[in-house]
Image 1 (cartoon, rainbow, N blue to C red):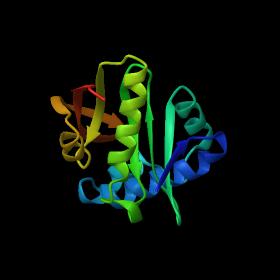
Image 2 (tube, one colour):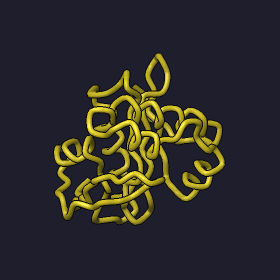
Image 3 (cartoon, one colour):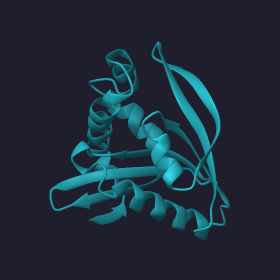
Image 4 (tube, helix red, strand yellow):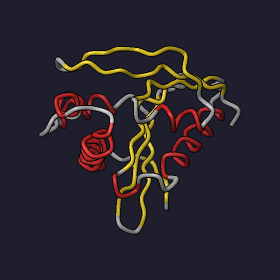
Length: 155
């Protein structure tokens, strides 16, 4: 597996990977209405372009193509972390988190945070994050539970 920087030409790939991940891996934790609110089909690529622009992003790829991506802010918030369904539970997310931690550490960031979904919070716990508080959010009329999580960055 190779990790590389995101390029603007990756936009469609990232959005397709996100949508597939939410609708496949998220189905264990959320209902159809929630999944459609979280990852509408078809996606709005211009909204995605604007969302991704201020973020640092890395892509993971293997011989078959994209496996995942991570996006974070300069203040240490991991905003997006998704793996392709075919690559789930193969260490992709762990490698992406480590790469982001290394980058943030080099920038002097000492605390990481994320807002983890029901499916993601156990993974983030294995990465050393702890739950600060549960949160309830509404997106496109659907209500979700997520968890604000933090970690001291010792990368």
